[in-house]
Image (cartoon, rainbow, N blue to C red; front, side):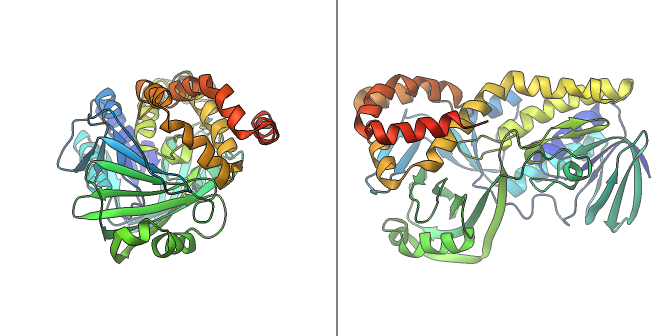
Length: 398
């Protein structure tokens, strides 16, 4: 087979960029290893209203719920509620959402090859993507786009990995007590060191999950469900067949382009550093990828042309990635005691007002900068010795 573009991975970013390029008249092939787009999907499925409006995506039947508030449980388990009493985000059926994008790509003219796994990529003037499955063989392409997730074979074969720093996640669907309009966030090093746990209602079930920088996420999820003082009382029944695990890469952990190759979505590490969310950022950057790929395919998709993609991403998200990674590093260092102290400032009316005025579900940079104004008071409460530890950690981030 031959194509202008071969996209490895039929997730949201891959189908989005594939549909965009097919609409421009290019011959596009999307290679997806699973038999059905959207399955499996290990994702809390929370997406910001503003982000979808920006992308021109109208809510469909795949919306399972609407979120108006967040309830944060520090290690002390004393809840802190934040709300502006308006819909901030949707809870979505990820599998159905992915399939909608896949159908749109196919309608635009893209060819989807399901049940085919990419086993090798050779980059050159006429790149070769080797696949194995229902269409075992080779596809020649002028441009290869890796949309194949955090463990991207395209990124590896193209030499684009800089580091392999991941969050390890696990999630299960349960029958549980939960407010339909609230996302619950749980902090504690005993079950989610370096990240957090979550509970959100998604239609008839609830999704409970966590991320961790250490240990086995499945074991920690089991501990979270059975031993956590709040979650263990809320969960009634676990749907064991719906347990899933996944990885979330850290921004800047890979270069998103090289000669005749682009990476999009999790393969490019285009995710929010603080929450790990990747749908909005992944689709936004996939839009940039389609624009730059078009320029390259109209001439030659060489490294000089494709570099523009990275420049566009950094112009829009670079500062936010940097601030988020730094904030995450400090968060990863914090003890439960310090988390309780730090989150305690959210109980102050002035700080809560500051958070609600600067919060944006899809863009965290403005909130991080606003909270910096509260540093003097926070430093006083934490104490000089502990503060210096975090300052040193912050300065060591590269």
